[in-house]
Image (cartoon, rainbow, N blue to C red; front, side, top):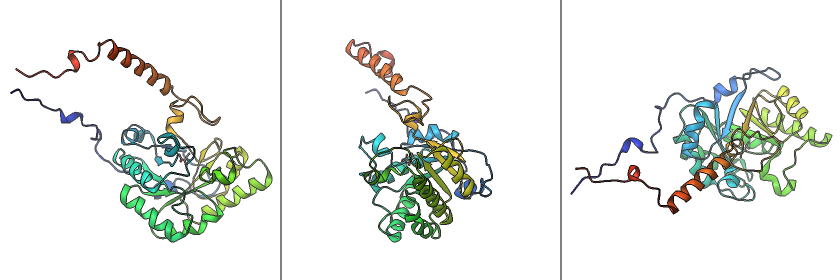
Length: 290
Ligand code: KIV
């Protein structure tokens, strides 16, 4: 009988570079030396899988396991149905695939709003079971006490103000926020509350440019914008959006690639070759060694 040898060097689970020293939460917080002081822009992208993390990690300061995975990976209409187990499974995969960037995992809707104690229980599960070093949660003034409770007990938190997608059923849509004075003032109060509560970064989503600029100058924590202009201390995008995996993207997204087009082309060629029996060839076939 001939022996078949499996080449274990090609294992997809083996990270290519050896684990090094990861970016830490204190290092990120220290990059901004106070309100109004400009800093080196922070680069953040979303990641949901091990291989995606491996490819993004060398280029990013921070990876966010966003609950946008509900829409992007699971085809859900909103982030509301996303569960803690989904976030933990994807969070652990992203930590396994990264060695350089700080990793933050989103707390899904329903896992932190009820009380600060419930938030602690679920956030500590996220850190224990994924290896990530921080969580992100949505909301401003209403979440300040919870953020203070978590940060003072060893759980670094990123705040998220402006357009908060988990509140879709209250907001009624995903339009940019802060078009009138009342909304603008509310966003400002939310950002200040989250900052004072000890969030080490603040995501500002879908707001008028002037608000992002005012907030960034007023808070001590670095701000990370998404649809919030260049005036933030850093930027984040959903990776699949910037890579062009979807034809339709929000106005604030720049498509750096046409992944949907490239995939369609590759799959079209594969299907044609299978149907014409021109794939696989000898090159892709196992033969007994003599
Ligand atoms: O879930 C997510 O991906 C996010 C970013 C868009 C900031 O919260």
